[in-house]
Length: 154
Length: 178
Image 1 (cartoon, rainbow over the protein chains, first blue to last red):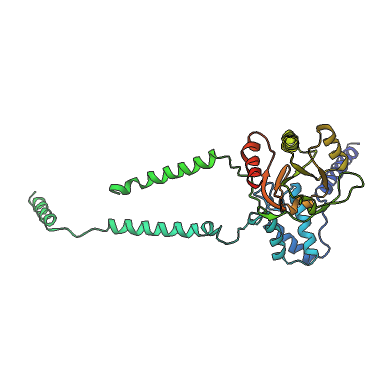
Image 2 (cartoon, one colour; image 1 turned 90 degrees about the vertical axis):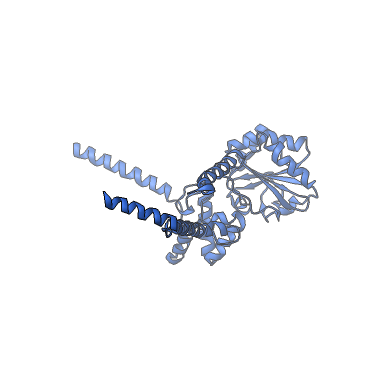
């Protein structure tokens, strides 16, 4: 009896979980696995504009779903990834790409690590120059001699 | 560390304070992404009208020789309800033509929404699958575009037109192009 109950519970549980999965995977991948791989790779580069720090590949937002559809459609129609990126940038701006392209707007963004590195190098060299011991002048030399003599006597 | 050099860290901290403070106190919304369509012609589209038997609504309907608004809305969108009053005001008191685009909604629900609140729109197009929304680069509803007489997009209002955003943002832009 208990075994039957357990089996029933398990059956219901698996039925439920597959039902849930069936809802989550409501999108049809492209029939051609090579094209689907291209589409998937591209989806990873496209920002979800609703959640903003996720790619459309792993976002559940409605707009992300629509954009996945657009990407798949265009890949199926034979568009290159560059053409699809250009299509999205023309509508949403560079921001739609998770990796911003290098242009005059993003020059500071891309250049800032090097700028900071240069500043640090300049700072360190300046500090080292200063801390390097300067030779003693005449007055100091005389004082040192005096001090040494006093040390010897004691 | 001597003389003026010793104040460098203090100056850096003060500058950062000033930057953070101005970024925080402005009415800039970090979720809002600048539209790339500003000063570009309105994108081409062809959408069924909400009115039965009426011809499809296209970008040609935006060239009326007068400035107009294109408002993306949906019955399922609460902020759209919030801005509705202001849209009515713009249509009635300012005599502005407003083209409504019902974004990802069923015609029945769009009709019910407008029956309940009144329609500020001269025409309503249906963007059932949200494709026109992508053409216009919207990230959600409501979003409102100000189109000049020559069919160019001059301003995009992101989010609902509520609070002082009508007076401070939309109306000055409207005056600018009139």
